[in-house]
Amino acid sequence: MSTFYHLKQQRSSIYIVCLALFLFLMTIQLSYFVPKIVTMNQLFFFTKIIALVVGFKFFILDDLVFKNKAIVFGLLIVFYLTTKVSHDSNIFYYSFFIIGAYDVDFENILRTYLGVELFCVFVIIVSCAFKIIPEQITTRLDDKYFLRLSLGFLTPTDFAARIFYLMTAYYAWRKLHLKLFEHLISLGLIGIVFVLTNSRLDFALMLLLWLIGLKAVWFEHLIDVIKFQGLAAFVSLYIFINILLAYTYNPRWLWSQMLNHLLSNRLFFGFIALKQHGISLFGRHLVEISNGAIQPQPPANYFYVDSSYIRLLVISGILMSVFVLLLIFYLLYRLYRLNSYSLLAFLLLALISSAIDQHLVEASYNIVLTAAFAYIKVEEKHSEKQLKMTT
Image (tube, rainbow, N blue to C red; front, side):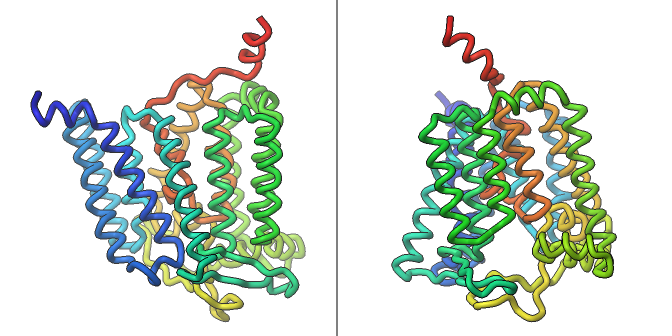
């Protein structure tokens, strides 16, 4: 048996190993391991090697016609050029794992994600507890009595978002069909994360996830009623309204000011990004001053765009935004046709969350985008499962 034939037979395993390493590096990157233990340059040196291996899997080992591979290669060149303009490489490296997931069982991808992320969260929290790496401890500007802990991650909000995405992936892995003790543990975890981080928006999203899991049959019925057309209309309207609210933000309007306060100034910073920096075809490098450093309060000149959709438009540009939206709607259509209710829940919650966080195209948070070209089994409805159990 030739070496090449053996590699072709093991191409899914090659992808899974590379994915595990990539997720590990990307999670460590967003903690205080950088620069305390390792440097960003060291992390991205290994990331480039891993991306090349995944590229080899797709372009050499996968059985696809030359035309399709040529199109993908052209898209990767466009993504690379956009990255050179914006200085944001998240989409570029993630794109290797989205296309590289071709013909890989998504169940294996999901298990790998859960295993690696749980391991990383444990290592980071333990390292923080033993003072190997520092943590950020802050208070809210409007409330000095709530301490917010990051537990080794860059900010308390980042830690809360990571737990939200981990829970969402777990619910998807369990096909939304959790046992009573899992519901209780989930609810307790939601409470603990809120007490530690005081992240109100992530708390609301985790509660929404918990309710979907608690009444999974209702969620399935809702999807069956509104169908793909309704899902596409909801997603389109939600993204449009998110951008419009920031673009039309006016502190003299009471409702706009109240909504901005509720969203922790996200409308204000989105307004600055859209109006002062503008939108271009290939994006631009945006100098941001974030709260991801050891300091008791945000810097006086704080400026960071949290909304993934506004980040896409301003930083990555119109062209990249179109590609990402096409991928989202294709994935939405594919999951609907496969009756994959659990992954639809994952995708929809990730899209809702992306209006308030920057994690839409960050693999160590939102792994569901790799489902676009992966192998997915048709999902069985809860009602059909219950019918089989009673017969």
